Amino acid sequence: MNSQKGFGLIEILIAMVLFGIGISLAMRTLPESNVATTRGRNITKATNLAQQKIEELLSVPYSDADLNAGTHNDPENPIDLSFTRSWVVADNVPVNGMKQIDVTVIWETASKDSTVTLQTYLTSRR
Image (tube, rainbow, N blue to C red; front, side, top):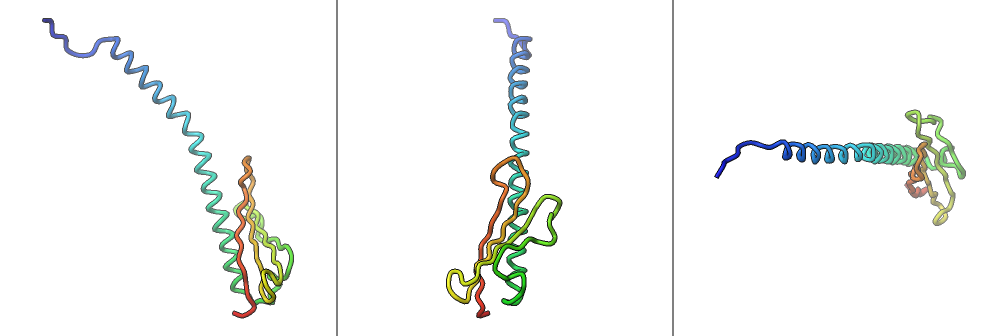
């Protein structure tokens, strides 16, 4: 029996083709993962901005102008060059003596899910 040591040319070519296919498939997933990472980062940033505004509104007096019924736009807009924050206050919702506050943060993207809204309630008895 003849003993052959090492790899032949055919085996090396097959390994190179398989390696090339694997690399090309991996390269195709990179742009998709970048889009998903950016989307997640924007959602997290928008949620944090909305939560920050809710905490600010909960710390001001009940009769403050920022808690008057209606829509309010943040004077800091645009925030970080791409986020727009606003809030809507509704009086006597869900019951008399309470206010419902909806804080919305919007940012520009090609996708439809570029809005985060957080809701809270405030009572005059604090």
